[in-house]
Length: 213
Image: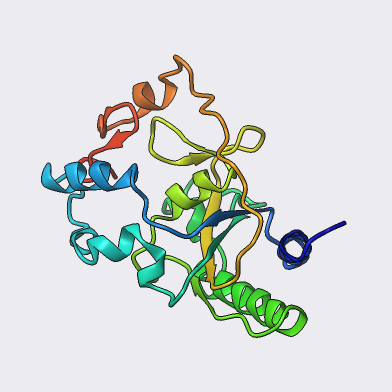
């Protein structure tokens, strides 16, 4: 017999796929104990460069229950941004993620639709969508939800399709079935470290933002 948590989880993952998200994983909302000392050490070494906003809301950045009242679950989603068309060699170089419409609006509208669908089909669920708009450690939550692992370049990597993804979250006060983290498949590979033109990857899994371009 399928219990409500199973049923709700299956519904949410099916809806996320319908809305165009390529992956959806779910974690229990709570304090990110392993991330706390890493973040503190990174900030203390001023490795956040000019990203002064990373110094703000330290507690909220590590605890989603401070962002959504009575939060129970963090729903993480991935949306691929690899473009269909490449840039003209003679044009200015623009990051692939900046092609097309502003991803903040595109993804937030999808997450709002997902929340509305949850409320319509499950009941009174309180939630909030996050797309780079609040202090949420999106890569940590995506990894915790089994969507990939954090590579030595500090980006989330999926085993079959790489790392050309936007990561976003829907934090809700609904208890669901939770996914488990996947295995780190980097092994002894140092390709990203060797390729970094500014040597910004100062140690495996550590990027100095002041050097990163």
